Every structure is written in structure tokens, then in C-alpha cells.
Image 1 (tube, one colour):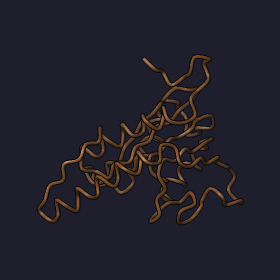
Image 2 (image 1 turned 45 degrees about the vertical axis):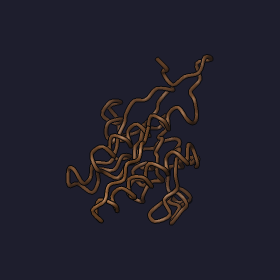
Image 3 (image 1 turned 120 degrees about the vertical axis):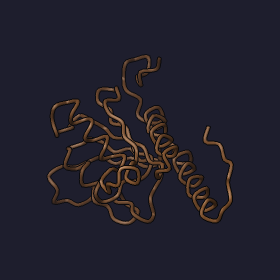
Image 4 (image 1 turned 30 degrees about the vertical axis):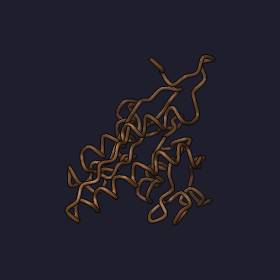
Length: 172
């Protein structure tokens, strides 16, 4: 099984972990949640996963990033995730961007931009505020097309359901 490391033992920095985040997004999709997924990586290994569950659990804070951060903190026994990276299929909102900074996450890898609520440059760039005591490196566009597509299909199907139609699209 691929453990997320290449043959030289160094972590992949792109598509492998974003594909794992996409698996989380698909879990949300199957629950009729906005399909956003996240994974947190430390030393080349996934230590936590999360996907949106705010509709299902009626909790506005249950975004993919928040769930993954909580799980990673519990696993490591610390709220400080200094040596961790997070891969997210959609650009984080301001709440999640703040949590990423507060958790001291080292790097943020983003799949698709969020032109309506993105807080890593699309609407606002929380990570560019100089006064914060922690800086997060932000990398955009990892598997952008795949990350964007799952959201497009979800919302197209949602609109069709509201109109009384059914859209058959495969995410495989």
C-alpha cells in the first residue's frame, strides 16, 4: 500500500495527499453535504482526516478543516500542529483559516479557489496579515480541476433535485 512517501522516503508534496482529501470530499457528497475534504500530514503520513458534516450534525463549525484539526490535535496530544501540513479540496473560509493559523500548521495546500468565501486570497487573505504571530505557507491549485469538479457536480445535482429532476453523474 502507498504510504504517501516516494521510494526515497520523502513525502509527496502534491497529488497523493490531495487525492486522499478528495476521498473525504466524496464521503461528504454521499451524505448530501457540500463535498469538501481535508487531510493533515506529519512526517509524510496522514494523521487526521475530515469532511463537511455541518448539515448532518447541525453545527456550523463542522467544516472539513475543523474536524481534521481536532482529530490531529487529539492524536498528537497537543493543539500545536507545527510540523503538520493540511490539504484541503476548497480554499478555507475565514473560520478555518483562523483555526489553521491558531493550530500553527506549517503549510496549507489548496485544491480549488472559493470566489465567494475564500480566505486565502479569493475574497480576503487572512494568511497575508503581517501582525499574526504564525505564518502559514500557502500553495494553491493542487488537483484544482478534480477539486472543482466535485463541487460543480454536487451543486448541479442539488439544483436539479430542487427542480424535481435527477442528474446522473459519476465521480469515479
